[in-house]
Length: 316
Ligand code: NCD
Image (cartoon, rainbow, N blue to C red; front, side, top):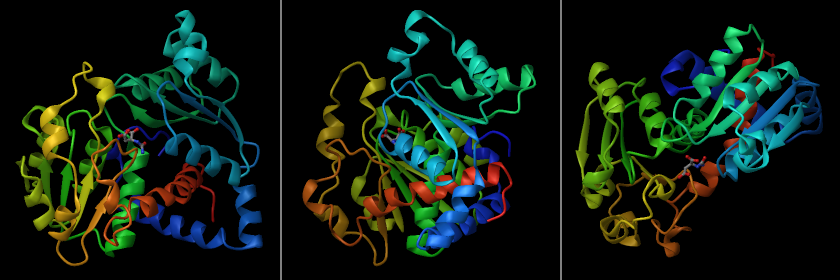
């Protein structure tokens, strides 16, 4: 795959190879020789990390992954303020200039849905070799986070088929939930339960895709139901940056995950969250055995290393 833009583009074969490579990389990282050979994989590749929206995990894990693979990393955080965008430059011009700088990869996070696709158009129209990675495009998608999420499920639950996944929170604006639903639709006997307040329901495009692919799903506003029925509960915060400063009262009242919810979970089921957490998970449950989002976050580096290696078809 030249560009990583949306989760619908990954097929099972790609995903399985990626996850095997991720495990291989995790093992290599434990040894001196392994780390040394990893450092040669992307030697002297030019990786530009251009973020117009805030980030901690995604920006750092991409930077760490690129560095551990030996690439040169050039980064601008807060590009909307510090880059020429502040002077009115278009995204298209910025991307074209980075391609002229011989960028091998541009990892882009942007406020607007479709921004990564626009970057791809610039690359293809001008015949550049540059790869584009969507690191979050507004309320669109966040495909690499969903790879981390899927890898976590596979690792922690031991399977990706025959599972019930409850995805809860601000599903309208939460791009990670869109990408995850698309990925899960690839697997057999997956059932999805979308849990949200009525004004934050899952996007129509995602639901249409699930219908087309015969993936059973239900929408509910019952939080206890999610915790009683699911093998995986995946929770996200209210994406306040897309709302008009209105604290959502129903959300803050009814959508905080507490110990009572975790106690309702079937044996072996797990609670995941892409983080950051903004009050929607009670503080006193973070260390319960079924609450695994810190472990989930830890996979972000190896998954992104595997993704970059696959992009350049390097043999591990
Ligand atoms: C997510 C994002 O940026 O969409 N964060 C992340 O990358 N781990 C989730 C969020 O911001 O709620």
